[in-house]
Image (cartoon, rainbow, N blue to C red; front, side, top):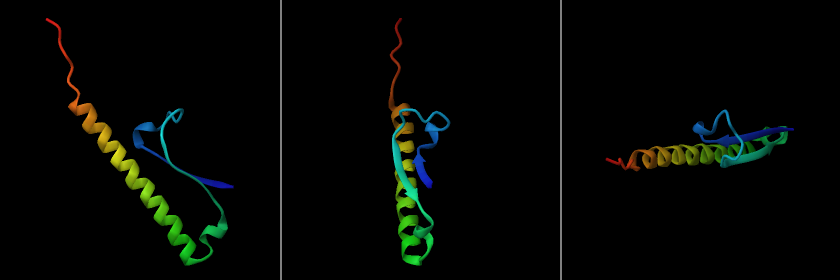
Length: 71
């Protein structure tokens, strides 16, 4: 079977222990009619948007952290 897995871009290529936003088995039946295909694409789109949001939060968090310097 085929599988669609969506993770944040920063997770690639080390996938151990990273949050998985979508992990779905996909079969040819999922693409045999328009309604099923649209539902699959909708789920993929949600996962991609969630991944983009997670990436943005990570960038914002890294930018907001301040390093305390010792004199």
